[in-house]
Length: 281
DNA sequence: GCGTCCAGGTCTACC
DNA sequence: GGTAGACCTGGACGC
Image 1 (tube, chains in turn purple, brown, cyan):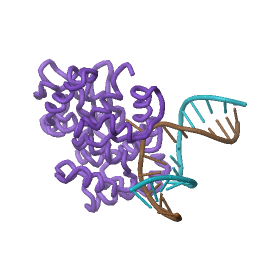
Image 2 (cartoon, protein in one colour):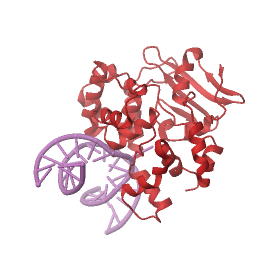
Image 3 (cartoon, helix red, strand yellow):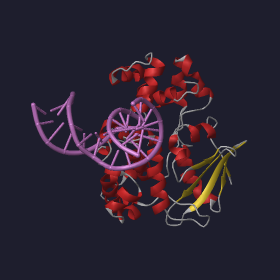
Image 4 (cartoon, helix red, strand yellow):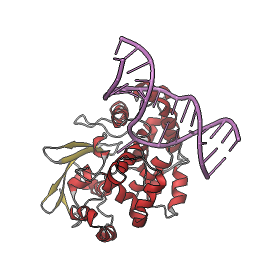
């Protein structure tokens, strides 16, 4: 099944724009230039996405039902015209609009992005991949072709604390996942509402930080994934890249980094991410 | 082989 | 509101 995509959509840029495509149930095929994953959990179905000359192909036994979640994860309905217009003020960032970069791959649910964001905190990327791989492979629903879905909050809530320590290898984060899953499964917390929340970003960020394990970095990363880019989501990796690219490889205060990107206003979080991930750095 | 450090931070106690 | 110290894990590194 083929679906239309915006004229400024770049499939490869979207799936390789950040590390999410490396985390199960996402899988990429560098040779075939495809993105695959299992959608849904009650009746999980596998799909493989690839760019075509006039849009995007969804290869799945239930492709029609997947158009909405596919549009969501690839941000096909998000408008980046203002962002590309703003970038015209800075010649060195022209490559972003030229490559139609900026759409950051996200999960079908905010819950999945929330769990994964916590998995990125205070550990190497290898550990993040290990934790998410363990979670999906040990708790996800298996499809007919042997793939696994991302587990539901209910499935996670049913697991004892030991699962997160001994099976997922989440260490001290175990209590975070257990509590989060129970809160979502019982309806005390509904992260999906953050997508349509029209409160000021600072208020939404404060709400996100109510979740145990979510601090400034994780909250600002989540804000980007729900379409708000005014937080920088500074972490050690991003700081290191900034020092190298813009400060002669010398450490500096976060306030200097914030000041550097302040002129990009509500898009500053996206600008710093793209600036720091520019090829050749 | 062993010890130390650190990585895509956060929480709590304390001031 | 700002800061110090603790916190799981596993890979990299030096010895």
